Image 1 (spheres, helix red, strand yellow):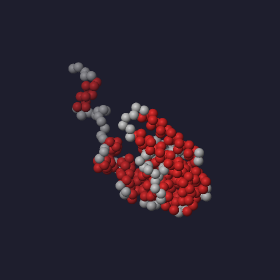
Image 2 (cartoon, rainbow, N blue to C red):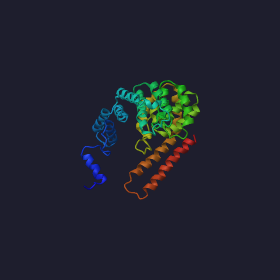
Image 3 (spheres, rainbow, N blue to C red):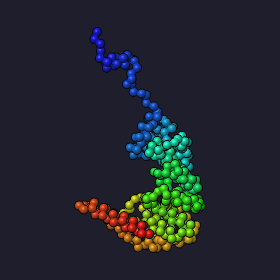
Image 4 (tube, rainbow, N blue to C red):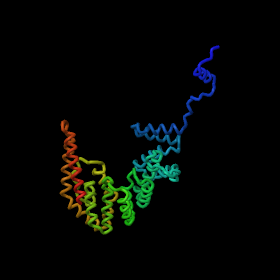
Length: 322
């Protein structure tokens, strides 16, 4: 008898029913659910996306990554109470993270479902007309994750103002100045800041902040003032600059300017001063829009970059010169 080589002997043992170290482990429901969640972004059909997430949550009820996507679907469908309930369940499942030390919020992907669930609760409370509750969750999120990957800082002062917490809004902006220097422009935040300054009696500071706010979205002030907005068929640097953002802002927060006659007066004066500048911005962005329609232009990239840089520098100069 010839002694078989080791790999053959191992194969004979496996075929005889012995234990194999290389035998694949049984697939668990948790791993199946995780695989479904990983595959979910590739699906285009809304029905298949929902069915995939529901199956993942059924296989592994603790899979909060699937649950938070389902909660977001409910939110976008306008079922805010249902979305709020689902987000609260996610918070309950992932609550142990809140008691751990040294958690790398958002950097550790396992923390993202909880952060998104808290953000979802904040937005649901807002849409359900509970501004105080929304503001409380927003402040909690900023304390938990100061880097604020989800942008809670842009909503929280507005919720505070809606809830009548004007002093809290003032405190928020003092904290904001210290903790978010050089932050990206945001019209919603800037309008809230200008209103807060006005309520503090600082009309001059409010007018300066309105310059920044108006240039961040040229459509918001006209909607608040009941005036015709500028033309819309121009280039918009981002979604935050678009007319739809102004519609949503005015619909949700426009009433804040109706509470104080002085607040509306300061806004009207600031907007009147900005009319020539707004006209210049519109003209520059109209040229950018026209350039986007060119079918062939060998110098397209150079011309585009030049016009865009000039437009951005113009806005920056106006804001810094305020």
